Length: 272
Image: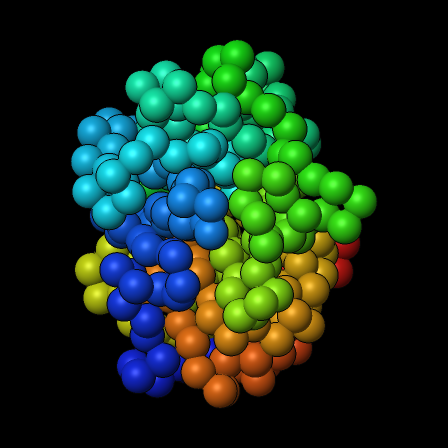
């Protein structure tokens, strides 16, 4: 499952991803702060277990205030684990797509991982990863959207429902500068390999983490939907943010070759 090779010069520094947008990488996963014109800011995703203090200190250093909300791309353990502690400390709501609610309210745990996805240690270790049920408490709210999918707590951004990795996975798009936060809809490094994902961060376009992706048909459609937005900047949950004139074309290649690049051999089925 080789990815679409991306030149090193397309890597965007995490400390200045785009206007008002900064990132923090913790081990193999990213969280982001998005600042708004009114002086408020939003935390996107909430990292690994036991990282609340790390995230809070970083966020308050770069923003100097508490956020208006924590917004989740989805509820997997590496994107949600510090959410409850941070929300309680900052006294803010946590927003997610309603299809993620059963996994964030203690009702259900995510499906068992695909240990046979291959590609590296992350797949082999996937049975050890927490998959819930998680309870983030009474701070959980449904993503606030208008008919045009604008997000009240993130002015200028729209929600793009991108199911596949999970049923309620979402991405976020800012049309003004074509900035796209993709969560785990796809990655810019090989997510199945711990050493590449956590250390080398080799810039390549890959599909979502194969060991935890639930619906490959939906994931394929979501990547095509995001590629059609022709983003100028891509901000992933795993890997480096990327930009450059070649990026839209590279995303179209990922969408066109999605099955060969992203879908593991034991899920090579159009209905999977």
